Length: 151
Image 1 (cartoon, rainbow, N blue to C red):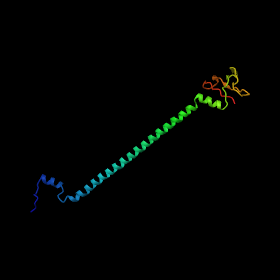
Image 2 (cartoon, helix red, strand yellow; image 1 turned 180 degrees about the horizontal axis):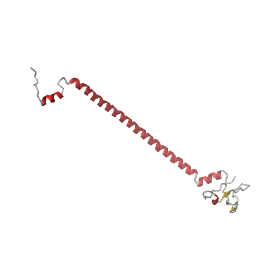
Image 3 (spheres, helix red, strand yellow; image 1 turned 180 degrees about the vertical axis):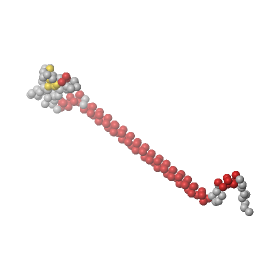
Image 4 (tube, helix red, strand yellow; image 1 turned 135 degrees about the vertical axis):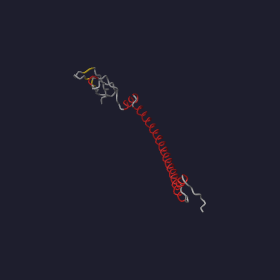
């Protein structure tokens, strides 16, 4: 006789749902699949973590480069401001032999001259060239152009 008792009724139906043979063969592929999925997940996390770390290093390098370029831009802007300051422009103009111009005359849209032109008060100039500048109402935006030194 068999060592397992004979089940009847409801217990027999429930017993049929569970396998009765050796369970080792059916469990091996499942365990292998679970180990494979866990290993693959760990490797994916490692790769993702490495990619994030590499991105953080690149971001740090780009921020450092941005700071250096911003500092360089500010230094260049300071140089431009120093060269375009009125004192620096006047000094460089004198070095080039330019002299301050006299009173400018303005030409109105109707052709009349407004103001009395005067020659530049420069030393060593033989002929005075006084530029005529358009009157402010002759300009499209209403602003007066600045007179330029004659040559």
